[in-house]
Amino acid sequence: MEYRMVIMYVEIGCFVTCLCGWILVCSTLPTEYWTFSEVSRIVLTTANYYSNLWRDCISDTTGVSDCKDYPSMLALPVYLHALRALAVSAVITGFFGGVLTLIGMKCTKIGGTEIINARVTFSGGITYLVSGFCGMITYSWWANRVVTEFVDPNFKAQKFELGAAVFIGWGGSILLISGGTVLTYFSGKEGLLKSSSKGPRRPASYATVRTRRMYMQPPSSRVTLVPPLYYSDGRSQTTRGTRRTIPIENRDTFV
Image (cartoon, rainbow, N blue to C red; front, side, top):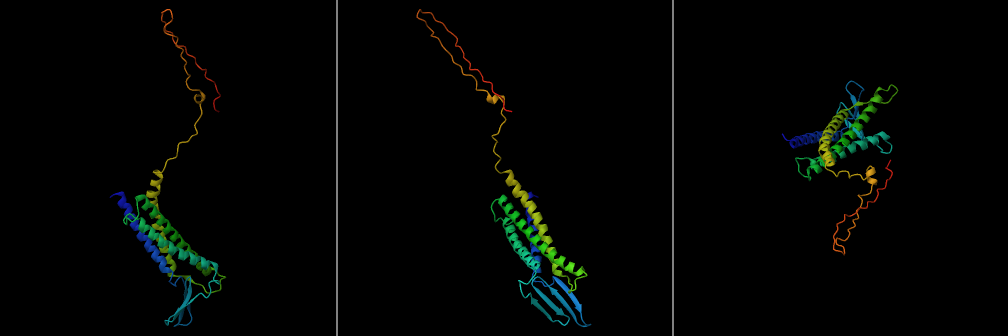
């Protein structure tokens, strides 16, 4: 099997993995079961409290349930605003990661050359990684607060436990991080390394080591004096030309 076919199947597998993780993360946002608590009042009536980032809910064994949104955004604690922002960022970046990956994959043939497609796929993998880390921070931060309040003996308010949405979000974040890591590695290996190897080379440096030969003047010029070949009395004479050599100046070598 050719290397290009292997890379194509790897990209498809990573895209499906990241898509499943993104769907799991999106499914946790409207779910109320981020935390839950059960309070038994009498034998036949049990109240269940559960909540998420946007509302608190209550239900009992009689089938009556009611949810109430948080009354004021400005009155909410700072960590809840940060968790909301991270959760929304995970969804948005996961969406754009899917778009970039679809454009850059080898099986779609939407982009231009192989190197350009690899770079687009690399961008999609990085976006998937950002989405996965945003989701992981969101669920871990929420779980940390719930567990801290539950094990604190001085916490007198109602204690909650981790809901199913937190575990689903952890699974989706792990899928996003795993798929994005593999996608980034193979696309970066193909796109970035090839572009750097075929890029313009570094120009030759003009700094050279000066030697004694560089300070020497070019070969001496020759001046040839040719006497007349025939004299007035009819005799001929051939005289070798004389050479006059310009002395070579001695200069200090470069230290």
